[in-house]
Length: 424
Ligand code: HEM
Image (cartoon, rainbow, N blue to C red):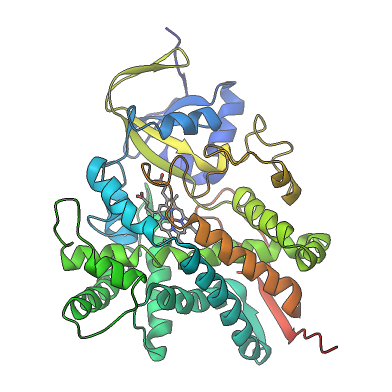
């Protein structure tokens, strides 16, 4: 039986945090790992087998071999996803509830999302024209909060939008807490409580017939949904998972800042986005592949099995290396080059482009909002390329791969925003 190569040390958590998205790639190179499997110790000295690459992702999403529930750090559940959220479910409960999320992804709902995104950016132009400087990262949070709440059918008063947006951002940022002291934990929990209170109230009001969200919206469908036992969801839990239909949408602001940076650094791409919808799609995909966002996802071995000649023992912790898989030279030619055209011939594998998880939408934990993310990115990139002009002042555009989570350091600042209108 082969022995899995090890990054020695009693607890490498600090090292993982220090090397950030490059930890796995660094160890693979240093230890001479050719098959994408090595082990480390982290999160208080626990043995963790790290899987990287397409094969690794395929194994990670095999429900017979890998258990996901109970593996997410408690504080991430408490702040980012919410107690009892779909992410924490397994088996029949998961498949049942996931079908509810996926039932929202109709052609009509996705087309509406496209229109909302397009229109909100267009209507936001005047505001940005009047600003000395626009921080694209920050501006997108508010805009996406408006798009997300409207799309989900929840009532968000205009004067509350900024507060809701800030609370959402605080929650999203909490994933940087993995394995380290997190000063913002309390603030994050308080933000979650406020938003949960608000959404639980909307569920109760809908059920009582006091508010009337349209059929097909997330609010309507969640409030009226019954699980496979014929039971409605507890109102608190229902509010929590309702939030999971649009809180993550606000996180797309990170991809938007990355996309704006990529366009700035590749002026030719900007021209192509203007002219070609297919290119805008490929550009959105490349932004999701190229830039650092989710670093790892956790799981554990369900039952003993063998993989690539190694023993995997029940209950051993596993992590799939998201960033490394999307920069694996065995899968991606020149992976560190930003090259949207690579998606022209992409076969659509569920195991290589995995910025939002992989596998099957209905039976795995793969992100329910991946199509929504691509649509929002396409429309936003088209808007930035063709509906406005702007200057990019001197600023720190670093994307530090050695720190979690990944950001454009400045947030991507633009100025002198002007609308482009073809009046011929
Ligand atoms: C799950 C990332 C946008 C809803 C996930 C997972 C990741 C992820 C990594 C977990 C995959 C796994 O555990 O295997 C992202 C990123 C986004 C994004 C990076 C954009 C920046 C969205 C949007 C929605 C959404 C717009 C709106 C519906 C969900 C839900 C789950 C999920 C409900 C849980 C699925 C399950 O447990 O079966 N996402 N997501 N996400 N995402 Fe997203």
